[in-house]
Amino acid sequence: MGTSEAGGEARSGIGARLRSARESRGLTTLQAAEKLHVDPRILEALEAENFAALGAAVYVRGHLRRYADLVGEQPGELQGLYSAAAPAPDLRRIPHQLPPPRSSRLLALALLVLVGVAIAGVVWWLLTLPAAKPHAVSAELPAPAASPGSDSAARLMGAVADAHARGGDAAGGTAQLALRFSAVSWVAVYDADGRRLTEGFNAPDSARTVAGAPPLKVVLGNAPGVAVQLNGQKVQLDGLVHRDGSARFLVDRSGHAAPVPPPAVPGG
Image (tube, rainbow, N blue to C red; front, side, top):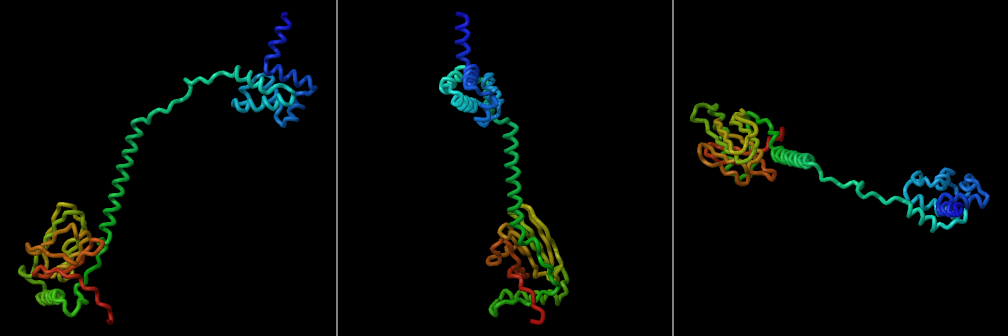
C-alpha cells in the first residue's frame, strides 16, 4: 500500500513524469535537448521543477509543451499541474504610482515663469531693435529730396540755413523739446549742428526734456509710446511713423515735423 501511494505521488509530479517518459524512450537529457534545440539545463530545470530558473510563466509553459510532446506526455495535464502549483501573484507588492512631489510642481511653475520672462524680453528687444542703430548726423544737413510742392520741407530747410547763419547763438535761438513715454522706447535727439542732446532707452511713465537750436532731429524706437512737445505745443507725428513703430523726423521752431531728408548722393 505504501509503495502504491509513493508511486502515485511520483506520477503526479511534473518533473517525475517528464523524467520517466524520457527514460522510457531511452533518451538522455543531452539527447532530448539536441532534438529540441535547447540548452540541456532547461530540461534539467523542468525535471527538477525549478521553474524559477526558466523565467516568466509563458516560457515555462512553452518548454513544458515541447518537452511533453517529445517524450509522449500529456502537455495539457502538465500545464494544469503547473498552474495549480504556481504561486498566485501578491497584489500587495504591485507598485502604485505616487503623486508627484510638491517640489516638482513648484519647479515646473518656476520654469514656466522663466520662459515667459525670456519671451517678453525677446519681444521687447525686437520692438526696439529697428531704432537701436541711429546713423551719425552730419553737421551740415543735406538738401531734402522733397517734391516741388512740399512746403514743410522748404520751411525746415530754411530754418536750417537760418540756424547756421546765426551760428546757433543766444537763448532766443533754442527750443525746448519735451518727451513723455507711455511705453519703453529708445530715443535720440540732435540739434541743428548735429550735436547729440540725448540718447538712450526710457522706461514707461517717464519723461525727458532737452533744449537746442532747431530744427531738432528726433529718432524714436517706439513712436506710438511717445508724446512729443516743442515749447509746450504738441508735435503731430501723423504719417511719420514707420510700420515697425520707429520714426525719424525734424522739428522746426514752430513745432512742425517732417521726415528726415535722405543723404545726398556724392557726385549726384
